Image (cartoon, rainbow over all chains, first blue to last red; front, top):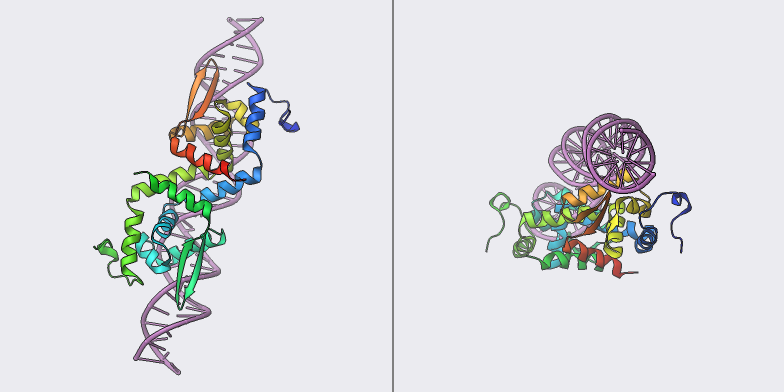
Length: 118
Length: 118
DNA sequence: TGCATAGCTGCACAACTGCGCAGGTATCGA
DNA sequence: TCGATACCTGCGCAGTTGTGCAGCTATGCA
């Protein structure tokens, strides 16, 4: 089976068949990009702190999150906007308070993961 | 218990006790930063493809990885240097070939995670 | 000894991202 | 109706990061 694209077929390889295995393992480029984007959302300490707080404490208001993470309000708001646009969190309005929570199960699982270690 | 640092004690909060819970949930700043750095390494599609290939196919040479991921050699080399500096991968020299593999178990677990879904 | 290959490094450019400030919108209470 | 609160948005600056190119080191084979 030849999984090496034509435009790279002329490259020398050390283990040709393992290259094919690797290409099969990587799979769809879109799939990889989707996960890279997901990880990208968790790659910022402040966003990550925000998400950990939401995951373990439950729904929280923007200004409370700001205090808990040491950010100012606009910074927290902007981070939450990004996360909401990505479908990771969702906010519910109660009067003038908006409480956010984590809705993306994949991300929630990742967060559990970094809760597990010491 | 008052977990709100003195420099933020004058901020208004919606649910004061939940802010304390959130601060406790977030825990050590260094811990959060460590995980953010970890996620940061997985946040680039090419690095992620590299790591997925290594995780599922086993030890692979640099030039093979370059072919499999569509990167040119220096790009693959630089990505691997970064990952090695972070302690995520390690390389073993065999003659003039260097074969890399994933050594960070936390990262390996995360990679399994994004293998699980469709 | 000479040559090709495998991998590494430095540099410079462009693009992205985080961040704070200032100002705007919407809701609640007096 | 008026003010305060909770949140959102736009703008601009600074720092970081990805990328490609050119050249270097080291190994193996003839």
